[in-house]
Image 1 (cartoon, rainbow over the protein chains, first blue to last red):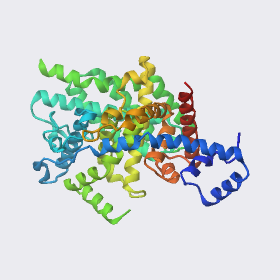
Image 2: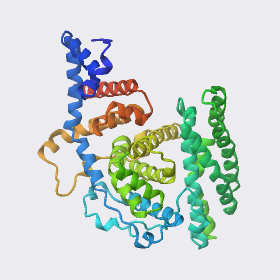
Image 3: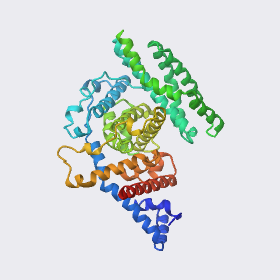
Image 4: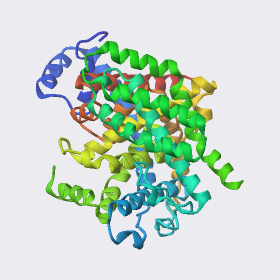
Length: 263
Length: 193
């Protein structure tokens, strides 16, 4: 069986997901190769063990235990853009806070208690990370600072995702979606720097300036085959320590804002 | 794209809150299940679910309908899952800690619901088998693991996995083969101990 040319088709064959011609060819081979028949049999047995473990059933139960969500009634009126975005954030956070707040053993409890968007979201509703604008920010100073910090934190986290994708993935330079994401982040960078100014965090401002430079370079990549430029930017991302700083500061602004709010 | 899906997406773009909720409800169970099986952590699955919908809401205006909405949404979740693994590996390198020390593992045994008590079969070995399989799957390389989750648990076609993960069908086959061989060898090794 060793190095059989059909080897990569064994698992698709077991799953009955093999092209007709390849399946026919494999079956012809199997009719004469005892070793490959045994190999397929043992792979099938391994997959059978996964089925017998009822892992899928457990995951289904956990997923099915997620409650229905309902939006606060007030958010259903006047679906202006800002309201829509705010409601979307509430909807998402309601679901997330439910999952975060529950133990697995409690997943089967009646969903009604956690289903209310308002009751399941004890923290103030966070505006969407795309930046619904200053109107969505609470007026109270402490809450507002915390809210601004949360927006910045989300921005840093999303920026880190994009840079990681760029730094680690193979042919990602040809991905238009990545360039689009960089352009979006670049647009948000200015707002983030305004926030950095407002919460008086020079370290954050410096990081955002560094980030802006890299994002601009990625967003300007017009030739996916320009491996020299891709490599240069990739090295810049990896060597600058930007990813580590993004990770650190994406956890930090909330604390900074809270500290400032108390003084 | 089916007409009803197109209609819902049009409503979402127009700011219809009910349509947002419809979309969320329709997809979150499946997305959450994939995330849970992939990350094997309820906290991580929750984070990925949240991030997936945030990204989707933000960029739904750019969704052109070249693929189905389900495919598009799943692809977002997959990318976040894969990045999450990279993030964790990087932070482990920084902190010198093992995966098991940095996040709570999902324990499906704890997911047993009241009213669904563990059966004798469960007590006698299914649970142990499940723990062993989860441990093996958790150690698969991220892309192999994702391909295996999508194939075995979501029962997607190889062609669909290829589309979702932006890799060739040959690569999907190769990932699946390696994953199942790893699984078989680990189970055999455990059996010999």
